[in-house]
Image (cartoon, rainbow, N blue to C red; front, side, top):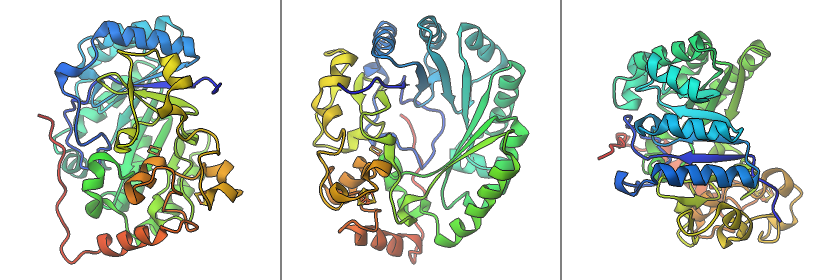
Length: 359
Ligand code: SF4
Ligand code: FES
């Protein structure tokens, strides 16, 4: 039997007021009329808690667009779960936050697209910066812990020092600096988003110095730009190991991007329990442990560190979800990634960002 998951990522809706080009949600979004109703989400939370999950991350899209959010927060809280609200901050007024805090939100994770109003709003596609600054102030006034999350890419990496300063100014306890992962919509914009090696050479020491300077005051988590690395990231800390995701339509995913693996048979909470899906479904068991691995992963000592990298990336770049993640220097397909870096970072004509517009 697999160990219990730590947490549930509940993607309450794909609807979102922002239009970020780095969005990793699938190309085909779940429409509003296909979203799970309140009673189904309540059942999902019950089942996640029975399975052992202690954290519920309410995410999307923008979870504030669900009118039943306070009820869902209260239900997750009544189960004894730690409730994390993952939001763009758009719509998080003082009153709204107050009612969510009294319903039981324990923590807020706020996205920030860039260090300045102009940069933030250009990447977000709407005027959102001032609303984010206000939302951060409301979170602090309410006495809740705040994490700021910034997705990094070629368009904002040069402003890394400003982004760190902005998170400090907002009063964040934690800052997640996550280089873009190329799934869903983000893959479409890869040539606009991939950072240059020179950008990373400047940014990496800035982050390391800030981690040292802010130790004990603001934790900084830095997710690497894996295309430039010799080894892959330990994606999800192993497939089906720590967290499960429920998409807005009730699909249960071993990782939030798993719909990109078209060969994966995905189950739904309308048909099966989370217990059965977590423990017995072919999708969750497909890449658990080490048996599924091919060489070079199978005989590599790093397999217990990086679990062979990312299954979604392996599928997208090689067509085989069980292949070694091609960002690994030991992968027979590493040349695919080198070619992408060569061809996409400095194309003669830089394409413009395809903004993500919800209809
Ligand atoms: Fe990790 Fe596999 Fe590369 Fe070894 S061969 S470093 S296990 S991805
Ligand atoms: Fe799906 Fe890495 S994003 S396994």
